[in-house]
Image 1: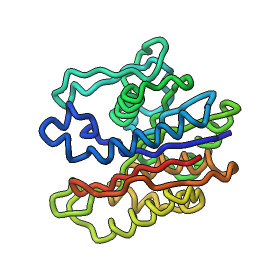
Image 2 (image 1 turned 90 degrees about the horizontal axis):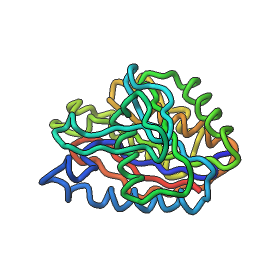
Image 3 (image 1 turned 30 degrees about the vertical axis):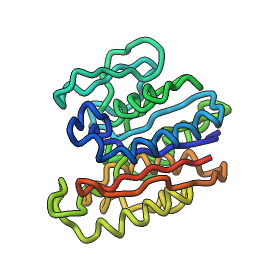
Length: 235
C-alpha cells in the first residue's frame, strides 16, 4: 500500500555541478525536495520506488544499486540508486536526478528501486503500473520525478504555448491536493504537445494512490527557464 509520496522536478540542472554558475537559481527547489524526502523517511516505508520519465531504451525496472551519472552534461559525477548490485543498464536522467536527491539526503530508510516510464505510455497503463507498485510491499513510498510543460515562455525549450499555464495550473493543484482522479484525467495528447514530461510518472502515482486517501501539500511551484517545476509531499 502506498503510505507516502514525494514529487520532485527532474532536470539535471537541479544538480549544482551540472548547473554550475546558475546553481543558486534552483536553491529553493532543492530545499523543497529535501523537505519532501523527509516526509518519505518519516513514513517508515518497507520499499521506496523512484519513478521517472524515460525513453524507450531506458524504460522498465531498475534494481537497487543501478548506476547513472551526468557525464552527458559535461560533469564527471556518478550516482547509484540505493544499495545493491550495479546492474547492466544505466539510469535515465530522471532517475539519476532522483538518485542524486536520495544520496544528498543520506537516504537509508528503506531499500530503493527504480521505474522508468515511457513518455507516451497510455494513461490506463500508467495507472495499472502504479497499482502494481503499491502492491509490492506492505508500506510503499514513491519518489516521482517529473516536470510540467516546457512551453511557458518564448525562450522555453518548446517555445511559448498559451495552453501551458492552464495545464500546469491543474497539474499543480492536483499534486498539491493528492487528487488522484484529477491526475488520471490529465490529457496525454495535450501533455505531449506541451512537452510535459511529468504526465506519465504523475499518472503512475495516481494509480498507486487511488485507495489510501493520502493528504497532499504543494511545497514549490515555479517555471524557471520556461519549464513548470513542482515539489509536493503526500502522506
